[in-house]
Image (cartoon, rainbow, N blue to C red; front, side, top):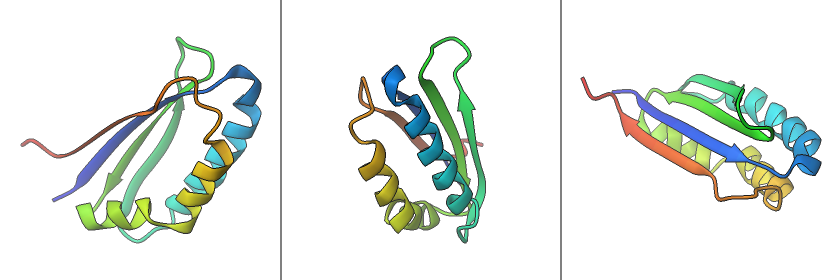
Length: 96
């Protein structure tokens, strides 16, 4: 069964360029991962500096492998100080 994630981030406006560059690199690498079905980055049209990602993996294990990948760790190190509030991450499997 597929495993899905929606992650929402709000970053300080002065870090938007760094955040977008880092997120673009992360997305490109993640889209190549085994088990990644979908990894879409969206800008929130209502809040400047706010983004969300829609992710879908073949299995929960594929998601775990993503979370442990070198590119996600590099992303966190690059943008960890950019957030003005903690990221919100929703995880789950298809309900029906």
